[in-house]
Amino acid sequence: MSRRKRSRKRLPGADSVYNSYLVSLLSLRVLKNGKKKLADRIVYKALELISEKTNTDGLITLEKAVQNVSPIVELKPKRIGGATYQVPIEVKRLRATNLALKWLLRYSRERAGKNMSFKLARELMDASKGIGSSIRRREEVHRMAEANKAFSYFKARK
Image: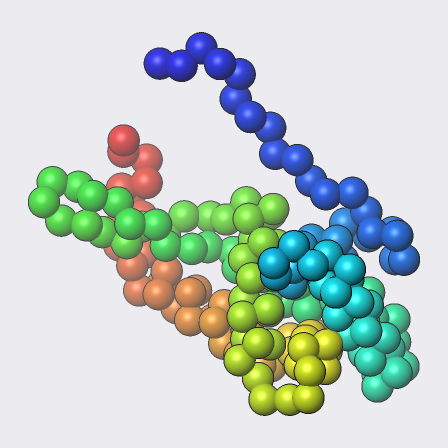
């Protein structure tokens, strides 16, 4: 067993415009090839588009979207004997937020549209209303967890 200290999770600092950790997490998820300024520009433009279209603050819409998409349970494969079971486990809050951001970006990239900020804004607005592909993904994960609820007693065993 290693005697080294366990590494601690480091959260990114709050962003400069909205002073929000959630916005900085989102811009880090948008980030490709180390182009942080471009990622920030995409996120800020998306939040601007949201506030123009809905007459509400873009940050509030983002928070509501992440809250709606965040899963409560997820499936983890567990090998017992010769078989692999999909065991439903509860998701911690940080992991749920990261999964929500991952799904929001994945389905916004798959959308048809002008540019990334426009597609991201549409996906965030849909998710805040409780519709869209990312919401469907969360419901699919919950449905699978419900179907595999019989294997939930395996999570206590090591």
